[in-house]
Amino acid sequence: MQKWLGLILVVFLCACSKQSDQALGTLERDRITFSATGNEIIRQLPFHEGAQVKVGDVLVKLDTKHQNAITAQAHANVAKATAVLAKLTNGERPEDIAVASANVQQAKAKDIEVEKRYRRVLDLFQRKLTSRSELDSVKANRDTARAGLRSAQEALTKLTRGARLEDIEQAKAELDAAQAQRDLESQRLADLTVVATRNGVLDSLPYKRGERVPLNGIVAVVLADNAPYARVYIPASKRLNFTIGKQVVVNVDGVKQPYLGTVRKVSDEPAFTPYYALTEQQRSHLVYLAEITLPEAAERLPSGVPVQIDLSKVSTPPPPRIKKTVNEPKQVTRSKGVL
Image (tube, rainbow, N blue to C red; front, side, top):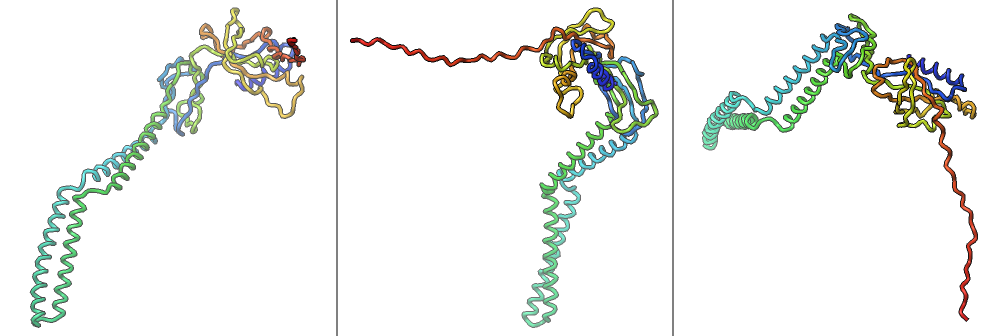
């Protein structure tokens, strides 16, 4: 609507070049748009269009079943990562350590028994009372028993020493990632309930209850509850002296008393961009969009009301005068000599 109104005003200003002493426009307010963060069905619309809303009021409630499931899964992943980290930092259970210690004692006993048998067979072999194969068999059993003892001792050392530092750091990183994903999903769940962020009037509800809205579709529009501003178009001939901070008189249709406003914004580019070089006469038809802040006394004025600004007193400042310097011949003074 604002775009079409702006184009109509541009055409009107270009056609009526004799009225270039007036800047025309309308009263506008800040429009706060709220979009859907998910492709969900609207479940509740607590307010109707035109209602007065305050910060924190629920404007639209979208369906949360799907997002509730995703959020619950994120919470479960955090619990899982927390348990893994606790397991690595708390160490092994005492029962597992006791079993490993018993395995070491059993391996030691077997190693002692096999060692004694090996010595007996070696003595018999030296006295040539047994065969070489018997000695080799007993020696192999001894070596096997020693390897089993070393394996049991290493297993006990691994359980008592705890997890590696790298494994603990990896578990911490996985826990941080799970917590971040949980917070993200929780925020997405909260965003399915659209709340007002500024006081104002609920201007539009494009969708009805029960409709499925597309992702990023606008579900509510609120007009800010503050004084409106004048949105006008300034002719190119008056643009040079129409600067930010300048105070101008704003006349509102239907209001006898004019308002003193302050220019807060002036567009750097004209309302349309020409693609050919324009002549001086054509450039005079260009207009620039400007916004003028009105005082609090205009707070109750409705949006869309036409306004006019008298530009007859706004004049272009004269160009700076360049002082010309003339090279004058230097006067030579002669001093009288002493005779």
